[in-house]
Image 1 (cartoon, rainbow, N blue to C red):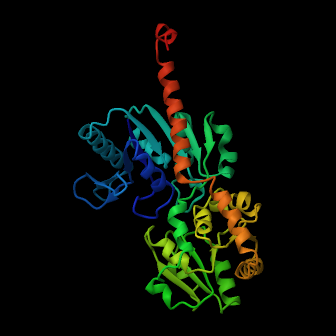
Image 2: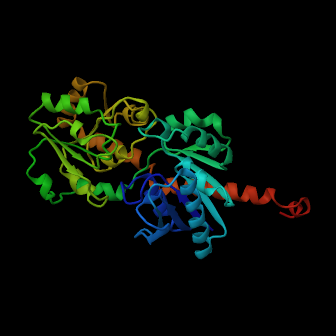
Image 3: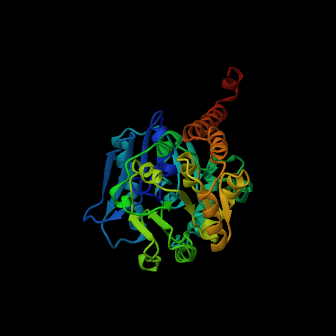
Length: 378
């Protein structure tokens, strides 16, 4: 049995939900991760490389200037040849992007899974056809998983077999930040207190909030790690106490996190953040860092309600929250509560639960395809 993923996210972009899950699925399946095409070649071809996690990363390279129909036809042909070459005959299709339906319709998977990790239609530059394609994927899918509880509540009536799986944690990796670590050279000279963020910097970040708190507290230093996408970098606040350190690898993140006093999530409250379940919430906590966040639904519940994360609704409240976390009196009590909560949640547990649902659905589909006489003896 093979598992084939269609993703709008690149494997080597930011290490998040798809990478966590498929690096674990690769222990049980031959795993293929199909990315969206790159238009840089005179002739169509597929580039496939085996990642260190054991996942085959497959990238279509196509000529520039093609129409949508030509793009889809080339990808279908490339994938058909690829399936033949790799002898992919019994397989599960796993979708992160409904737009991949345009290239996968000629195949016959044993199971179709839609891991709806975000409300993609609310993101900047979302394809116009996305909502219609998602409706078709809901009709086709055998299983639907959602990236958080709020997204599950919004989608639960659209499918009979839908399950919420909010962001999980690789505790062992991020808990390294609790130990004394050498400070990276580009963070070494930044004074304390350091308030940090890592992740994608896009329309989901509240730039005006970051600007306000940096101006009001020039004695605090804000460290921003991650790629800038879909927004003009020139629009980011450029105060002397804001330090943009660029992208870092997944392996490097605990080293940077170890040198922070407080972690922050200055997300904007808008359509693009309405259903997000940030993976960085448990990652910051596993690193032993207090967290201040804007009122994102899946952060408020459960983290805010349990007193694990400070929730702020304005620049003044955000500053008050950081001050409170910098002067935390009962850090040991808080950290015990954090660890008790995180013990119930991991990417290993999440991937195992997902595989349980997949196995159950596969067995049910197999049973239902047997003849009545065969059913008598099952």
